[in-house]
Structures are given as C-alpha cells and as structure tokens.
Length: 344
Ligand SMILES: Nc1nc2c(ncn2[C@@H]2O[C@H](COP(=O)(O)OP(=O)(O)O)[C@@H](O)[C@H]2O)c(=O)[nH]1
Ligand SMILES: [Mg+2]
Ligand SMILES: [Zn+2]
Image 1 (cartoon, helix red, strand yellow):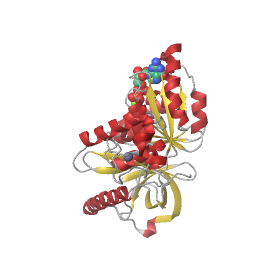
Image 2 (cartoon, protein in one colour; image 1 turned 180 degrees about the vertical axis):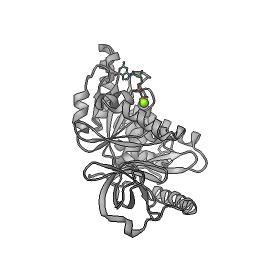
Image 3 (cartoon, helix red, strand yellow; image 1 turned 60 degrees about the vertical axis):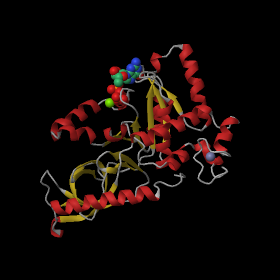
Image 4 (cartoon, protein in one colour; image 1 turned 90 degrees about the vertical axis):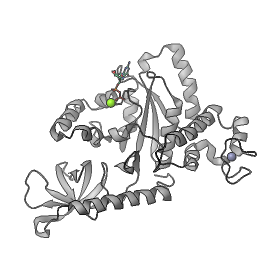
C-alpha cells in the first residue's frame, strides 16, 4: 500500500493510554496463565472475532479455535494476524493462547463515549461507504466517512444503494453529483441489493483483500451482505443466541470469507462512527483536494474559515475546490465541537 501515515502521534498516545488502563484492569481480574508443558509450537492465525478476554482464531487449515490471550498483549481485534499456541489437550472450550499480534497494516478506531478511542478491526483494505437513495442521500455523511478513510489509510469505495428507486431524471442528477467524487479519484458504484444491479461490479472490488461496510442505518448494508453471503443471516442469528450476551452481541465484529474470494468484516460498532477523535487539522487533511493548498495561507494557524489570505478560500473562489465540498467541510468542523464528549 502506498498510503501515507496510518495513525497520528496523538492517536498513538491515546490508544497506548487506553490499553494501559485496560491492561491494569485485566491484571486485577487475573488472566489465565498457561503451563508451557500444555502448549504446542507457535503457529500463525487470523482473528475472526474478539469478545471479552477471548478470541476466535482461524488456523492455517481454516479451523476455528477459541483462545485466551497472554497478559502482555495489549489489544486483539477482528482481522488481526496473530501468533498463537494450541493446547496439547483440546477441551472444546478455550484451546489455545495468543502470544503475539503482528503489525497491522491498518486499524479502524471507534470513539466510544465511555471508553475513549478503541480499535475495532484491523488489516482492512477497503472501506465500502454505503449510502442510499432512501433515506435521503447525504454527501456530508459521505464526506465524513471519506475523512475517516483518508486518516486511516484505508481505500474508500462509494456505494449508492437502492438504485432501483431512481427514475431517469433522478439518475442523471445523481450522476452529476457523483462526477465531483470521480474527479477526486474516488470510485462510485450505483447498485441495488434488491434488483442485483451493479452487484457483479462490486464483486470485482471485494474478491481480494479485506473489506468492511460502513454507513448510516437503513441504507442496506445488511441486505448487501446477505446478497454476497447467502448463508449469513443464519450465522448472525446463531452467534447472538449462542453467546446470550444481550447488548454486547450487537457490537461484536466478525470476519467472513466470501464465497467468491476476499474477506468481509461485519462490525456493528464501526458502521456509524463519529469523528470526535480527529483534530480540525486532520479533518482538513481528510479533504484530499485541499492538500495542495495547505501551507500556503497567509497565517500559519489559518482555520480556513474567515481568515484573510486563506489559500483554501481562494481556491474555492476560483472553483479549484468545489463549493459543496468546502461547505461540507465547514459543517463537519462545526458539528465536531458541538457533540464532542469532554474526554476527546
Ligand atoms: N428498494 C430497495 N430497498 C432496499 C435495497 N436494499 C435494502 N433495502 C431496504 O432498506 C431497508 C434497510 O435495509 P438494511 O439492509 O436493514 O439496512 P442497514 O441498516 O444498512 O443494514 C430494508 O427495508 C431493505 O429491504 C435496495 O436495493 N432497494
Ligand atoms: Mg443492518
Ligand atoms: Zn486557510
């Protein structure tokens, strides 16, 4: 991947602090200690799901083993590749221990109102930003997700679902709006989970690498997932009845292997997320077409709002930056300070 930085120093520091807190809590609870004699040689694995002190790890043969974690490990999330050791005697419950987590090529963070910034899924290659004709299409929401994608170094893909609800005039109008994003080199797909329109094109983008669907509730993420994985509905039901963890089950992320190839992470916790953890400067960076103009403003601490000699505002006036995207940027900045909990 040729993307720039993955996490800012501020995010690193915050995650480290959170994980320190979590580790201290775990130490008090007393994590399981494994006797060396009871463990086989280290082997690689892929984390399909993580819940509490345990994780489901898939081995090289595709078998799933429930594991605990060494207390030295700070965080394990869905999508992590790990080094783990199998127990010599399988019991059918906890049959291994995760010894190390390999370096992540990307991580999605969720700002949790109570817990601070939490990693929820790792090693994602493609963030599929789902919008729909109904509920009303919001380019401001799309822009928020694009900022998040740009800041994590995960490639975004814009999907507009429910194309079956569009008449010809509406479709032409939409194509015009999408042209702006295509100019910025964002791929946009118009599709319908109901009619199947565009689904084969979507397949081309997800049949290799790991993808995740994000977007507002009601846009059709579950419908799209069910269309891609006919067996999924049954599986999700099974997970929630088995664990019996009530509310907790709604936030458990899970990695699935797609029948046509590629991996898909279903993460309810990250489907709709706020940008509380980003600084205004990071939001600015997240608007990729602003980047060539940054550093050219008259004042070094320019907020690009009403400041005199602002290169961004100048570019908007010259139509080098679209008015729509600039307005959307201002809207995001305002909303960030309005809804932010104190500890972000
Ligand atoms: N007309 C139409 N409706 C759809 C389409 N995809 C999903 N829906 C409907 O939109 C509603 C929300 O879908 P759902 O998959 O639950 O959205 P989610 O909240 O993003 O997971 C449901 O009533 C679906 O039947 C589509 O392509 N066309
Ligand atoms: Mg859903
Ligand atoms: Zn400026």
